[in-house]
Image (cartoon, rainbow, N blue to C red):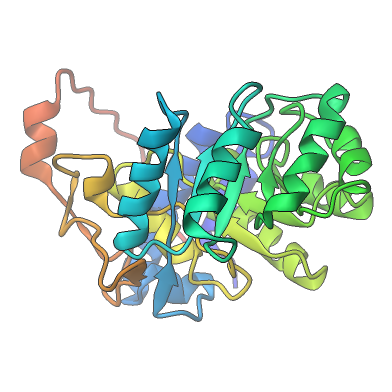
Length: 298
């Protein structure tokens, strides 16, 4: 049976990169298709979970005290993973402070956002003492070779993010042991179709994955919830409640925690949320309508 999202992917195949734009259109087709089938998007994608565990990402704070207060608040809210950003000069000290205050057992990871190089290898190896879930993308944003060299000397799992744009990128990284975990961001990889390919490849190779966040509004957040219901998304993602970032989200109802650190996967057809058209109309500053012939999916 010919799949509409595969048709969309093939239409885009001659276009290099521009993954965010491709993802926006391809994800809309997945939503439409699942609504036509009368099934939730998670089920159409092959999801198995009715609930997903979620965590939060904490940026570079003004002080250790502020950081510790924020971690404490998120732990009280039940989030299942704490991700802290690190950079040269803000790395070992904040991680050590969190461990000293909250213990070795809280699910803690560090995200370096490509801030280091192999010249920092000895410093990065010091992170091993803190029992981290992972250190995310410590080296260059487009690298896998140096990450393989670093992973060979680190106990802490390296998670690749920015350098993985496709299942083919993931295959190469896995083959050279550049990482032990991969972060799948649907927008970064060009849509749900590629995200599923990456998920399946990683599952076959015993590489756990998780769904990263990119400050999505409600529509993107809903797609993240759906993809995170797949079996190999075994690490809590960054898809927190709408109120974590927005006074008002553009969906109804907004994304909320059904239990501490838990989001329930919608059972309604499609993404499971309605568009808050009244809010979108209020915020719209310009509008352009494009029309073309109807495309029939078979």
